[in-house]
Every structure is written in C-alpha cells, then in structure tokens.
Length: 250
Image (cartoon, rainbow, N blue to C red; front, top):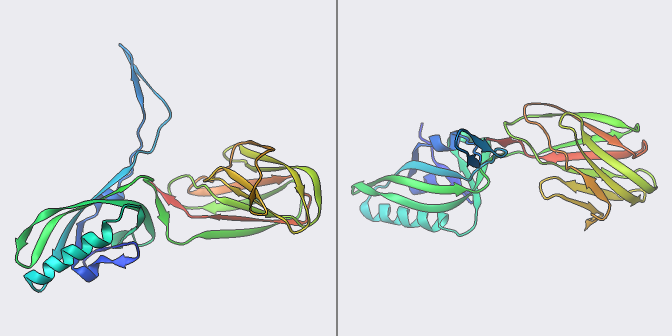
C-alpha cells in the first residue's frame, strides 16, 4: 500500500506523488520559554510551537515530460500563500491547517523525482475530520450534563444556548466542573433567542451580535480523553444547550 496526501481538497496521488515517510506529522512537541539563572532555570507555562511537516516523497510518471508536468502541478496546487487543509492518507481521520514552504529534491531517473515536501502548521494540532454536535435539554437549574470527548489535546467548543422562556436580568453561568473554568454572562433573553459562546474566539454573541459588556470568568474548554461535566446555572428549566467541536490531536 502506498500513501499520498490531499491538499486544499486535491488528491496529489493523481500527480504521481507518494509519501514515503510521514513521521513528522505523527509527533507532537510542547515547548517553554526558559529564563536561565546561574544555578537553575525557570520556565513559563508550556507552549505549542508551530509544527514543521517535512514529508519524504517520490513522484513517478510514465515519461520525462509527464514527470515535469506533475511537479509543476504539485507546486501550483500547494504553492498558495494561505493555510489550507492538509490530509495524509496514513492519518485518514484528521487534518492539519498548513502552509506550503517548498519542494526540494532531485531526479533519480527520467521518470522519478525524490525529495521532501515541506509544510508549516502554525496551529500544530490536528483536527478530526468529523464535527461533533451534542444537544441537551436544560430541564433543571442548575443542570449538569456529560460530554465524552476524544482526541489528545484540549478542545475549544462553541456552546449554543437557546432560551425556552423570557429571561430578564439573569446571570447565566457555564462551567466545566472538571477544569474549574466558568463563564458568566448577564443580560436578557427572550423566548427563542440564542446566545453563542465561542471558546476558540473568546467571544459571546446574542442573536449573532457580539455581546461582551457583561461577560466575566473563563471560557470553558473540554478535556480530551474523558467525560466532561458541563454545569449550566441561572437558565431556569426550559432551554436547550448545543455543544459543537472538533476533537484535536497533539
């Protein structure tokens, strides 16, 4: 079995490209900024540096002219100046958002090129291909629901809360009791109105319009590989909650 890749929705196996070593994509690194003192060093909180995806590849063709055409096509498809979705056949359940950096190598015969295809993922975490969307009834106050999350890295979901009655001057609280992260929003919601909490963008919207004047606390993330317990307080017992996210991988 041979592996290839898809970039920006285009399968590069159609241009004779075979990935012979995808190992950099399988490795995750966590770093830290160090302050060196004479006898020891201190580190701030760990950070996720950009991931360099250096993929060993071979491009094969039936003729020398076709090989040159294949290489031109690969550079044209990949050589964009924005990040695009990169999928590797060996990791068929996830993708990276990656920028093309270059294609280096040499002709090893009139019909074959061997080299390295290089991408950079500024967000080093991979995304699961399929999106998870879970719906819950808020039929108690407070209400705690359980969401089982996979992957290997923290998830930043979107919480969508729909009012089932008129709410005036409420303090709505959304807490992940497993992380202790809780967000509070104060305001009014009419029956059927929607409040959206986007953890990745750090923004709360009411009916699609930013509503951050009375927001405090922390945006609650989801822990990978275990059950997360999300507690909703101050929303009576007639609304609904939707949690939408993609699992992430280090």
